[in-house]
Image (cartoon, rainbow, N blue to C red; front, side, top):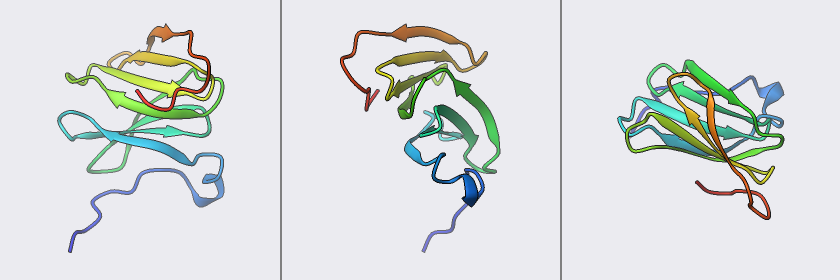
Length: 107
């Protein structure tokens, strides 16, 4: 059988507001991005479970996350109808992809 190498997330008391909607590994497997109901996308160290960076900017739940093939950009999709592109190195939003008629469930 396998063994858990890391647990990421928050305390159980915050679990309902912080429920994970999506999780994706970075291209090199070193990081895991999560999309949460609290409006944050977070990136975690896949080995230690330590928080590496948080991305705030969606007005509602973050539904989807995905790294670019080179790992330099994180894409997020939200309940607010936005898809966003984030520069992973700086944490800055570099593009708001608007015009969706509803929630963005996949990126």
